[in-house]
Structure formats: structure tokens, C-alpha cells
Length: 477
Image 1: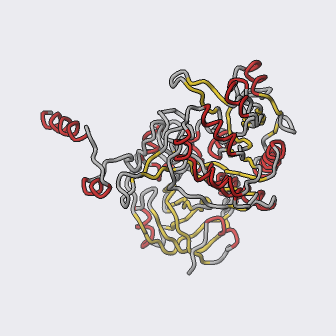
Image 2 (image 1 turned 120 degrees about the vertical axis):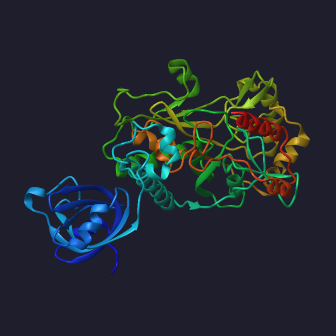
């Protein structure tokens, strides 16, 4: 007999079915035991009658969260027991057979309720249990629906999804790279991508014109409470699009998305405001202002685009100019002398996408003139040899015909946390890390054995002595 889901049982009244799932709760009423069976679709009430002694005795011993298989007849509930709060509230399963597939020990915390009152580190350690609660499953389902909507929308707009490499080259793009040592070429390293930036630009050189990807990005940043070392973004790149055409595309996408998936939300202003960096800094002292009229209204969405960012910012620590966005951003002038002479006055074709006081995306038109790109790198203090070493592949590609292009990358995690009224992005990610990038469930990062290090040609200095000292301290205790 084929297993059916709980929410399908309403179509099987009077028929025998097989269902499987977790024991959500157990209630004993005299000579009847009620078990609420939970699966991905919802809850089904199961009835065990004392007259069927064989399965009644098994049901008496079942613990909450154990996994069971049941066969029985779907009946209509008595009128006084109907529960209209759940989809299966008018039916119940009269159990004829029960099989305990997996016994469960007592859980370290309850998976009922929203879980906000439980220590977050404990929840992250037992994330596979935390994900059993309805709120967390709702968040992951909504995440899937949002990503599916984005894919469908962009497909209709003529975009194609292309996967780009995870193992790539370390280049100076802003944040620190995560490095991956090469076993076959000892002493050399791959880097995990901070974004698919160079690959998507090369796809424009290749003539794909409209690219997107649900991209995983990696940044080795210092500890920050509401950031993740790895995150997900909707990565978009286009050829022959103006800045306004890119912003219009994103505006139409998010208006449609909110209308379809979050009809209870109200977008404050359409079209989304276009505000310059200068005016928001002067008026709000922030480049991601919260423009909601009522800051306490969780159902109000105040989208906006911030445009005309400075091209460069002075780094007092490193005593040099740095790119505000990234070095591939196109300056609003092609005058190379002006770029080199007065970098503080140069504006960029850069734009940020903000929502309710958070930056949820950013992008720019890209420099496709190799001479302008080299000038930008020189302003940032890179020597010509270094530019050639780090970005020679991109500059070489530009020699073979490159279209004007640009893109944007809205973050999926941040947007979801806002529209789902969650306090942080960890609540909308299946297996998040802590603010200092630890995976409490898997115990990562972790040490590797000497054999692996030897294969990679690596030696960890200064760690062995520390381990010996820590071991001696433990032995003394």
C-alpha cells in the first residue's frame, strides 16, 4: 500500500490508508488513546481503541517524536471533536496497524511553539530538531517559493540561469577570501567566490546578454552579529541595459513577488523612490534609510534605490583610495586624467536596493573599457604587474569585444527575514552559522589530521605547542 500525506486523508473517508510521520503529541482518554501524527503536510489525529489490544499496548509505549507507520480507516470526526484550525480537522484515522520505525529519546527542548524563548546556540546545535517546528518549516517553504518565483519571472524576461565555479582565483574584491589549498599543486590555492562577479562579466563577453543565478557567496569577515560567512543572493547581469532599465527590472520583480506571495504586505510607494547618496546622507545620515511612515508597522514595505555613490573612499588605515562598491564599477566619467587626479570627486554608476532600513541588494554598471579599469586599479594603489597578475584574464577577454553591461545582486536571506518578520537572517537559513562563523551542529571549523595536511604540503605553526599546553592543563585538573 502506498503511503499518503496527512492532508490527503480528507479525500479517503471510509477507505483504508497508510500514513507515516512523527508523533507530535499523545493524549490518553480512558480506553482511547489519541496520537497527533505530524508529517510535512500537517497534522492527522489517530485513534487507538482499547478493543484492539495488540496495537493499543504498542501505542501506550510510544514516545513523542518517534517515527511511526500506521494503517487504518479514515472516518469523519464526531461533530463535537471537529477542529477547523487544521486542514484534517474533520477526519481521523482509526488505527488497525502500527509499526514503530524509529524510537525517539527525550528532546533537549520542545519543538512546539515558535522557539524564541530557547537559547539560540542550543537551537543551532540541534538544528535538525529546531527545523521540526512549524515556524521554521514555514520559513524554508517560503524561501523555496520566493526563489521559484524569481526563477519563473526572470525566465519570462528572457534570462537564463548559469552556474559559475565555486573553486576560483583569489582576487582583491573587498572582503577576505576563504582559501582552499590545492593538493595537486602544492603551495597554490583556490578561493571561494565572494560573488560570481568576474564570471558573470565574462558571460557578457560570451554574448549571453541576460544571466542570473541563485548564487552562494563566501566572505571571511570579522565577527558580526547578523552576517553569515556564506549567504545566498539573486545574481543578475545584463548587456546593453541602462542603469534605469536594471532598476526597473528589479522593481517589477519585487512588486510582482510581494503581490503574489505576501498579499498582506503593503508597498509604501510605487514606483520605488530613487534617492542620491548625497541627499540620504544629508537627510538621514544613512545610505540605507528606513522610509516607512510608521516604523512599527511590520506589514509596511518601504523599498528604495540609492544612486550616485562616490566611486572611491579614502582608507585611513591603509592610506590609499578604495572602491566604495568594487573596482569593476563604472565611473560616471571616462576621463582617465580626471579619475587619477581627483578621485574624491568621481561618482559611480552604483546603486543600492534598500528596504525598511536594510540594504537588501547592490549593483552597478561595469567598466568595459580596459584603460578606465586600469586607471581605477592604479588609483587604488595596485601596480600594473599586480593588475595583470590578478585580473589579466578579464582584461584579455575585453580585447575580443565586450558589450556595455551591468547587474545587481539582491540578497535572499535579508529580504526573507524582513517579510517574514524574523529578528535575524539565521531564522530563514536551514543550517546557519553563528556571528563568528561557527557551525555548532557539525562542530566546524575543526582540525584535520596530519596525513591530510601532509598531502596538501601544509604545516600548522604555533598550534601544536598550544594543544600540548591545553592537554597538560586538563591532565592537572
